[in-house]
Image (tube, rainbow, N blue to C red):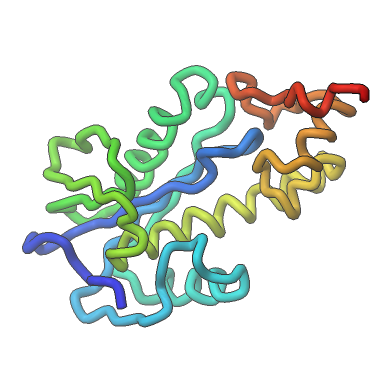
Length: 199
């Protein structure tokens, strides 16, 4: 089972993002503050659990967390500030939505910028170690997936209902065939030279 807290601070908040490696769609972050008596053996890194379990846990987290929030940062901003800065911005936006006075922030990964001068700790594979970061990873992933399903209806030819904007072969071939949309990240390498080779 993952640990409840990293620090001795009263209000510790975990944050994580989803969608950094995608060619289309936003990068999405979530922030979660869990109650001191929170227990759950199933919560883990969102990538390690099934879609069905993710959505079931999403509901549990939303109903039992002290507070939770999520934020999208869209491709125009990603192209402007780069994906790392956009990811941190999404985390900051999520933290800003919380009403509780946060005492300490734990962050998945190894890069972060101070949020309102709050003390923080970056933790590599934090979503496999701490419940609040794992819970944030589940909310970020499911909220981003919901967004991708919505824009899939507008552009069904890219298969975002299944690839969620990641650089699958199908997605890359669709970009080659149909061009790019307003949801694509223009600063990313969208065209795979290998797909263009005529043998």
